[in-house]
Length: 136
Image 1: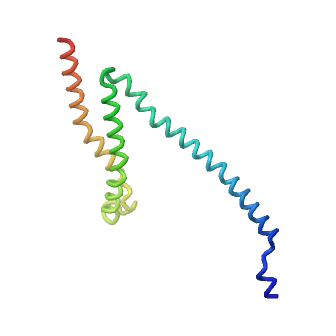
Image 2 (image 1 turned 60 degrees about the vertical axis):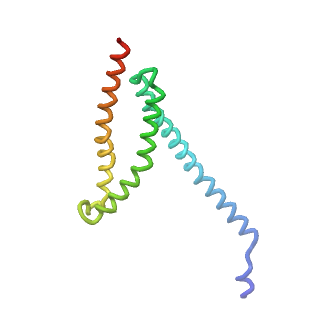
C-alpha cells in the first residue's frame, strides 16, 4: 500500500501539465492585451506633448527646447518617486495619518510646477530679447 502512494501515474502528470499549459495560455491572452494597450497608451502620452509644443517653439530652437523638455521629464521620473516616498515616510504617522502619508504625494508635482514658474518667466524674457535682436 505504501508503494501505491509513492508511485505517480505518468499519464495523469502529462494531463495536468497540459491543463496547466492551457490555463497559462488563457491567462496570457488578457495579459498580452493589457500590455499592448499600455504600450499604445504610453506611446500616445509620450508623443502628445511634443505635438502640442512644436507649434509653440521657434523653428531654430526646437532641438534645444525638446532636449530641455526631455531632460526635465527624465529628472522628474528619476527624482519624483524618491521624493514622494520620502514624504510618505515622514508624514505617515503625523500629518496625514488617515492615509498613511499618501496624501503627501501630491506635494511633489505641486512643488515641481511652482518651481518651474520662474524658469518659464526667464524663458519668456529670453524669447522677447531674441525677437528684438532679430528685428534690429
